[in-house]
Length: 177
Image 1 (cartoon, rainbow, N blue to C red):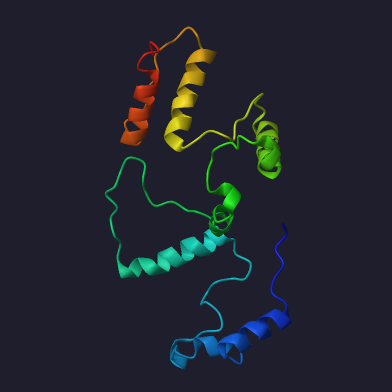
Image 2: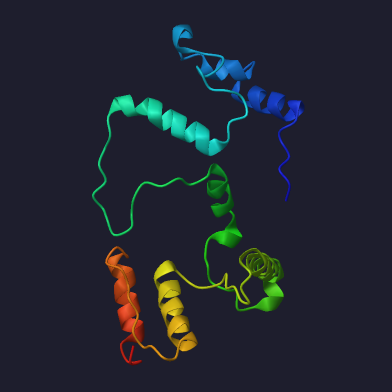
């Protein structure tokens, strides 16, 4: 579905509903001395990641909070578009729908994604329909062992989340891997 911005009539209707005369009225609480029309030394047309890095650089003067969670959980960039995509109902779960007749759109999306990935990577197969990350890792281990029958040994780095490691160990436990 394409993005269609609010029309001037939409904006006017919304402002009227909350009793504001203009969008600027929504920011009346900000003292005029703190308002700026443009961010200082930020050129127009910067990609989102560059603006994010620049703002993080400027915010570094505020101090840094260390993250001690570990096990692969760390600060990383998530593009703003991802938050919008993940709020759509069809993306709440990675599970493949069981009723094809009720899930044509989702199944088509999965097919199109897998097709695109095989073309981008040059691989013969792609799967977009594994369950959670831990189960996907376990399935990848099984696929790797089945593809390379000469080896039954798999190395899983210690940096992999402990819960993911447990799922892999449980999955391969009785399979001689």
